[in-house]
Length: 213
Picture 1 (cartoon, rainbow, N blue to C red):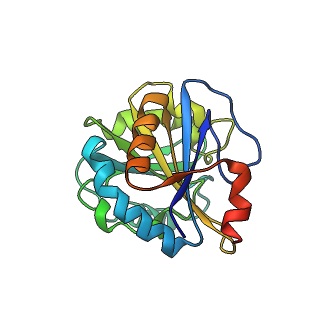
Picture 2: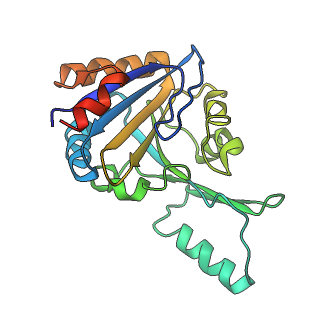
């Protein structure tokens, strides 16, 4: 299937039916028939994306309070910090018991599988034009530690760090999608590069007919 995308003003979480009408933010959703096809599309466009958003981080949250023994908690922390560099960050909110992390993936992004983003509420990539500290990024995700939802996703952009949120969605049956969410100027840049790379912009009302054709 030819790569297609939908552009939305505001925030459009693909798995939710409602949208958030924030005029300062926009969303692009790239659509393919399945996760394998989306991965090929993703890796073909990634080198272009990295020319203007070269720094990449991965955000993750457990979404729920940890419940278990100290030994089990140590095992969890070891698992969550696998592959961490010195600057990468894992923090536990002592009030909620939720663990959240920021990991620099700039050096690994070209081999990072989209399967690692399959928990789209609890894991996302962060693209940015400048080098940011893991702490500043984790602060931006503070209100989303229970998982990304329409009610809280806008808070990620309140600090105006110039970041673009990148998330993957796979319904396992009809299609898979990659989303870019960020300030309008950043998303407009991505839109221009997608169009220049042969991606076709469509209206959301056309999606069902195209993926079922």
